[in-house]
Length: 183
Image (tube, rainbow, N blue to C red; front, side):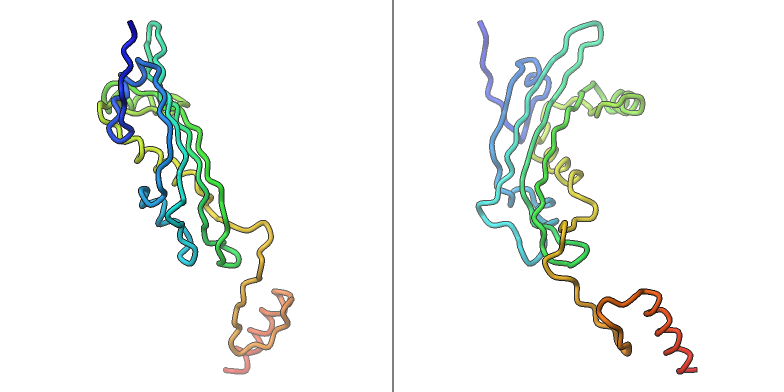
């Protein structure tokens, strides 16, 4: 007889979840992931209908060295600030990660140092939402940019009369001439 357990994403018993080979999935409003929300462009904050789609599957691998695994996937869309033109750029953020759980922080640290897998200490109350938020934050591009910016950044050049498409060496020469005139 198989017993079907209810699991909570906010207080996930990882070992039981893996033992059952259970699956959780759903959506969270983006506003429930405040650190991710803070990454959004100031002038285009996510609306109340912005969501994070996620799923988690537990797995226990039998054998001489039994392993507890958690496979996590999540995706969302977020407007970030383009680092070229400073306008918002829509970015699809997606993660697909597997975590191995072991007993104790020391065992996790030792195995993590030698393994290519992500290793975490086993807990009876894992906050899956925080784990997914961490992974989405790590998946954000370091330098978000449009493939082609809709409008070029307007930079004011005080005291210089330089053509829009000026050669950077010409700008440097003009600066040198201007500074030479000041002395």
